[in-house]
Amino acid sequence: HIRLEKVRAYGRTESADSFNPDGSALPIYNRSFRGLVIYDLAEGKLRELKDLQGSPVFSRDDPAVMYLLQSSETGGQARYVIRAVNFRTGAATTVADWTSTDQGGAEFGASPYSDCLVLGLKEGRALYLIDPKAPEPSQRVRRVPLPMRMKGASLSHDDQRVNWQRCY
Image (cartoon, rainbow, N blue to C red; front, side, top):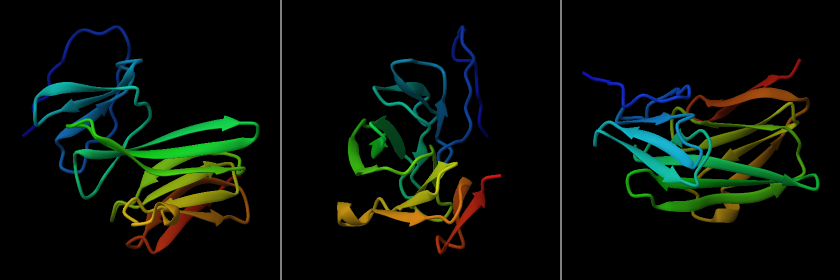
């Protein structure tokens, strides 16, 4: 039984789209321009994680850990950084950091089976499979070239298959 109450009057539109795996936390979007806000139902309070932006993908193994993708582009080269953040302690570590000349809008998602992640490049010709638990950082990211442009990607069949939808 979950009881949600209005936290306080607020001028902007807020939204939330998914709980963490054990249902104890809910990210709230458009609440702060300074960082990511998580409503921690276990503690009954809002947690603002300063300087963190993006849509979190929660860990399947640890409900307090979420993965955040930060991307930037300079001179035709994209840089992707994925960080693991414990929203209860604030501890953050870099899981993967790489550059690419592949083009496309980043679409970040999680496996329904494990902590594996997928980064699809919307309208691009590549996607990336990320294993945050691989012991060697250089082996955590694998590029998968695609024969045509994609518009979405996901993992299925216990992470044995990558599903992607072609663009147009």
